[in-house]
Length: 310
Image 1: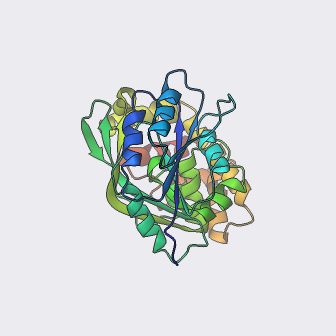
Image 2: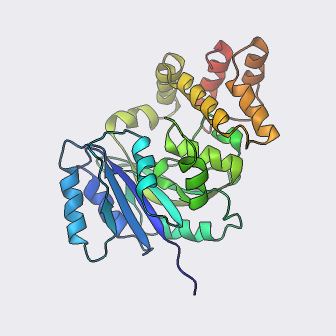
Image 3: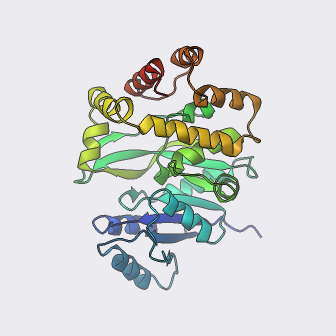
């Protein structure tokens, strides 16, 4: 008898009382029934935990929500997500979940349908969908940009095609890319997508499956067009340390998976992780493939190559 795939939803919370109810309501309204919601709170100072416990009590008959003990430890992101992955029961698929978004009813259903059809079930599989941006006051901003059907290592060196909350992945990805290695401090979405690009498959679904809430400060930085985006890049990447950190994360990825990487993958990573020389700067500056989806981001990273910052 065929058993329907199970899905663990991994919700990391921290001072999320303002939005957590809407998110939990959207998770419980999923049309796909075989889900378990694992929640780890990272030491909230508001009443987030009390709200979660109320939802657990109200849904005790279904036992769909489990609150993990945090042992009084604040892990931060992405470590709190990784901790949930370590403690939750084994499932067929896993889905990262942020506390302040809203999932559309068919989000998990679509993911399971796409993942189940993949012929590469024994390799790391990562699914992600399109989504919509809203302000915290409910104003629509834009839809996430369209992505390539075939995503390779080059596409996820300095760019993340999808945020964590739309990722759904299989047990092989959990084991090979997270539990059996030390992912470090790089955000879980880029780490997982890069790993799947190298050792498995990435499935892109152009349907919007969630509403992503952009708070006032973040909206100004990322959702006001190229001019605002360029200012953000100047502040955080050219004048700041963000891209130096990104290079360190890339070096960590290279070191972690060195023995598993293919020849062409090693060559690509060597170019972008080795110490700068004039020859490497020129090769990176004129690298023939786009490294970021948005024009302003691409210009910024080429400037960084030109000045030798990364």
